[in-house]
Length: 185
Image (tube, rainbow, N blue to C red; front, side, top):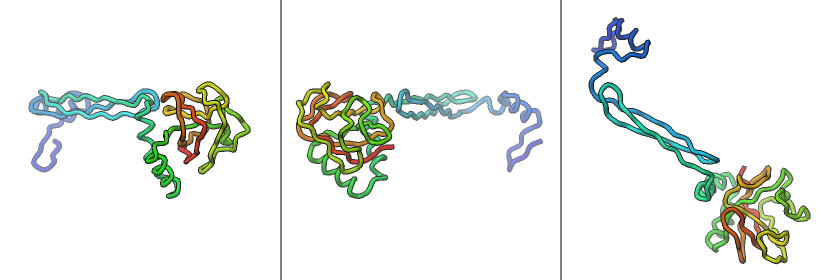
Protein backbone atom coordinates (compact mmCIF):
# COMPACT_ATOMS: atom_id res chain seq x y z
CA UNK A 1 0.00 0.00 0.00
CA UNK A 2 1.32 3.43 -0.95
CA UNK A 3 1.09 6.06 1.78
CA UNK A 4 1.81 9.76 1.47
CA UNK A 5 0.76 11.90 4.43
CA UNK A 6 -2.88 11.08 5.03
CA UNK A 7 -3.38 9.89 1.46
CA UNK A 8 -3.51 6.12 0.94
CA UNK A 9 -3.59 4.32 -2.36
CA UNK A 10 -3.81 0.56 -2.72
CA UNK A 11 -1.55 -1.57 -4.91
CA UNK A 12 -4.37 -2.14 -7.40
CA UNK A 13 -4.78 1.62 -7.84
CA UNK A 14 -1.05 2.03 -8.53
CA UNK A 15 -1.15 -0.77 -11.14
CA UNK A 16 -4.26 0.81 -12.71
CA UNK A 17 -2.53 4.18 -13.01
CA UNK A 18 0.56 2.60 -14.57
CA UNK A 19 -1.72 0.82 -17.05
CA UNK A 20 -3.31 4.14 -17.95
CA UNK A 21 -6.58 3.67 -16.11
CA UNK A 22 -7.92 6.09 -13.55
CA UNK A 23 -8.74 4.51 -10.16
CA UNK A 24 -12.30 4.90 -8.85
CA UNK A 25 -11.42 7.75 -6.49
CA UNK A 26 -10.01 9.75 -9.43
CA UNK A 27 -13.07 9.37 -11.63
CA UNK A 28 -15.06 12.03 -9.86
CA UNK A 29 -14.48 15.67 -9.16
CA UNK A 30 -12.90 18.32 -11.30
CA UNK A 31 -9.70 18.51 -13.25
CA UNK A 32 -7.67 20.97 -15.23
CA UNK A 33 -6.32 20.40 -18.69
CA UNK A 34 -3.47 21.94 -20.59
CA UNK A 35 -3.00 22.25 -24.32
CA UNK A 36 -0.31 23.70 -26.47
CA UNK A 37 -0.10 24.89 -30.02
CA UNK A 38 2.41 25.97 -32.58
CA UNK A 39 2.71 28.55 -35.29
CA UNK A 40 3.26 28.16 -38.99
CA UNK A 41 6.07 29.73 -40.96
CA UNK A 42 8.62 31.66 -39.00
CA UNK A 43 6.28 32.42 -36.11
CA UNK A 44 5.93 30.91 -32.73
CA UNK A 45 2.99 29.77 -30.70
CA UNK A 46 1.69 29.19 -27.27
CA UNK A 47 -1.32 27.60 -25.74
CA UNK A 48 -3.12 27.19 -22.49
CA UNK A 49 -6.33 25.83 -21.22
CA UNK A 50 -8.28 24.77 -18.23
CA UNK A 51 -11.59 23.18 -17.83
CA UNK A 52 -13.61 20.93 -15.66
CA UNK A 53 -14.96 17.52 -16.20
CA UNK A 54 -15.82 14.27 -14.65
CA UNK A 55 -12.54 12.51 -14.03
CA UNK A 56 -10.22 14.52 -16.20
CA UNK A 57 -10.34 18.00 -17.55
CA UNK A 58 -10.26 19.33 -21.00
CA UNK A 59 -8.15 22.05 -22.48
CA UNK A 60 -7.31 23.66 -25.75
CA UNK A 61 -4.39 25.37 -27.33
CA UNK A 62 -3.73 27.64 -30.23
CA UNK A 63 -0.76 29.09 -31.97
CA UNK A 64 0.10 32.03 -34.11
CA UNK A 65 3.03 33.39 -36.03
CA UNK A 66 2.87 33.31 -39.78
CA UNK A 67 5.99 35.29 -40.54
CA UNK A 68 3.95 38.47 -40.92
CA UNK A 69 5.07 42.10 -40.69
CA UNK A 70 3.65 42.31 -37.17
CA UNK A 71 5.76 39.33 -36.11
CA UNK A 72 8.97 40.73 -37.60
CA UNK A 73 8.30 44.20 -36.17
CA UNK A 74 8.01 42.59 -32.74
CA UNK A 75 11.44 40.96 -33.14
CA UNK A 76 13.17 44.36 -33.29
CA UNK A 77 13.13 44.59 -29.49
CA UNK A 78 15.08 41.35 -29.21
CA UNK A 79 17.54 42.01 -32.00
CA UNK A 80 18.32 45.55 -30.90
CA UNK A 81 18.87 44.46 -27.28
CA UNK A 82 22.28 43.05 -28.28
CA UNK A 83 23.36 46.17 -30.15
CA UNK A 84 25.51 49.01 -28.88
CA UNK A 85 23.87 52.01 -27.22
CA UNK A 86 24.69 54.06 -30.33
CA UNK A 87 22.85 51.61 -32.62
CA UNK A 88 19.84 51.62 -30.29
CA UNK A 89 19.88 55.43 -30.25
CA UNK A 90 19.98 55.53 -34.07
CA UNK A 91 17.06 53.08 -34.33
CA UNK A 92 15.00 55.21 -31.94
CA UNK A 93 15.91 58.44 -33.76
CA UNK A 94 15.10 57.07 -37.24
CA UNK A 95 11.83 55.61 -35.99
CA UNK A 96 10.86 58.92 -34.39
CA UNK A 97 11.77 60.80 -37.59
CA UNK A 98 9.37 58.62 -39.58
CA UNK A 99 11.87 56.48 -41.50
CA UNK A 100 10.63 53.14 -42.77
CA UNK A 101 12.31 50.57 -40.53
CA UNK A 102 12.67 47.33 -42.45
CA UNK A 103 14.98 44.38 -43.09
CA UNK A 104 17.55 43.76 -45.79
CA UNK A 105 19.23 40.46 -46.62
CA UNK A 106 22.80 40.12 -47.79
CA UNK A 107 25.27 37.37 -48.54
CA UNK A 108 27.87 36.32 -45.98
CA UNK A 109 30.04 39.31 -46.95
CA UNK A 110 27.29 41.91 -46.49
CA UNK A 111 26.68 42.34 -50.23
CA UNK A 112 23.38 42.05 -52.15
CA UNK A 113 22.00 38.59 -52.95
CA UNK A 114 18.73 39.47 -54.65
CA UNK A 115 19.98 41.19 -57.79
CA UNK A 116 21.40 44.37 -56.27
CA UNK A 117 24.69 45.98 -57.22
CA UNK A 118 27.81 44.32 -55.84
CA UNK A 119 29.62 47.66 -56.11
CA UNK A 120 28.03 49.06 -52.94
CA UNK A 121 29.87 49.12 -49.62
CA UNK A 122 29.47 45.93 -47.61
CA UNK A 123 26.81 46.15 -44.92
CA UNK A 124 27.85 46.96 -41.37
CA UNK A 125 26.29 49.25 -38.77
CA UNK A 126 26.51 52.87 -39.84
CA UNK A 127 26.91 52.26 -43.59
CA UNK A 128 24.59 54.37 -45.71
CA UNK A 129 23.80 53.23 -49.23
CA UNK A 130 22.64 55.94 -51.64
CA UNK A 131 21.68 55.84 -55.29
CA UNK A 132 20.60 58.42 -57.83
CA UNK A 133 17.65 56.37 -58.98
CA UNK A 134 15.30 56.47 -60.64
CA UNK A 135 13.06 55.31 -57.83
CA UNK A 136 11.38 52.31 -59.40
CA UNK A 137 10.53 49.27 -57.27
CA UNK A 138 11.82 46.72 -59.78
CA UNK A 139 14.89 48.56 -60.97
CA UNK A 140 18.58 48.35 -60.14
CA UNK A 141 18.58 52.10 -59.44
CA UNK A 142 16.58 51.50 -56.26
CA UNK A 143 17.72 50.27 -52.84
CA UNK A 144 15.43 47.58 -51.50
CA UNK A 145 14.26 46.25 -48.14
CA UNK A 146 11.34 44.21 -46.81
CA UNK A 147 9.14 43.83 -43.75
CA UNK A 148 9.18 40.03 -44.16
CA UNK A 149 12.79 38.85 -44.62
CA UNK A 150 12.10 35.10 -45.09
CA UNK A 151 10.61 35.93 -48.49
CA UNK A 152 14.06 36.86 -49.81
CA UNK A 153 17.41 35.11 -50.20
CA UNK A 154 20.47 35.91 -48.14
CA UNK A 155 22.64 34.59 -45.35
CA UNK A 156 22.52 37.68 -43.12
CA UNK A 157 19.57 39.83 -42.07
CA UNK A 158 20.02 43.53 -41.29
CA UNK A 159 17.72 46.15 -39.80
CA UNK A 160 17.73 49.20 -42.03
CA UNK A 161 16.16 52.64 -42.16
CA UNK A 162 14.81 53.78 -45.51
CA UNK A 163 14.63 57.57 -45.69
CA UNK A 164 13.29 60.05 -48.18
CA UNK A 165 10.63 58.82 -50.56
CA UNK A 166 9.78 55.15 -49.97
CA UNK A 167 7.62 53.10 -52.35
CA UNK A 168 6.27 49.56 -52.23
CA UNK A 169 4.63 47.40 -49.61
CA UNK A 170 5.73 45.03 -46.86
CA UNK A 171 6.97 42.42 -49.35
CA UNK A 172 9.31 44.87 -51.08
CA UNK A 173 10.15 48.48 -50.30
CA UNK A 174 12.26 50.75 -52.47
CA UNK A 175 14.13 53.96 -51.61
CA UNK A 176 17.13 56.01 -52.72
CA UNK A 177 18.72 55.93 -49.24
CA UNK A 178 19.18 52.91 -46.97
CA UNK A 179 21.03 53.10 -43.66
CA UNK A 180 22.29 49.88 -42.06
CA UNK A 181 21.45 50.06 -38.34
CA UNK A 182 22.33 46.60 -37.08
CA UNK A 183 22.43 42.89 -37.78
CA UNK A 184 19.66 40.58 -36.65
CA UNK A 185 21.22 37.15 -36.58
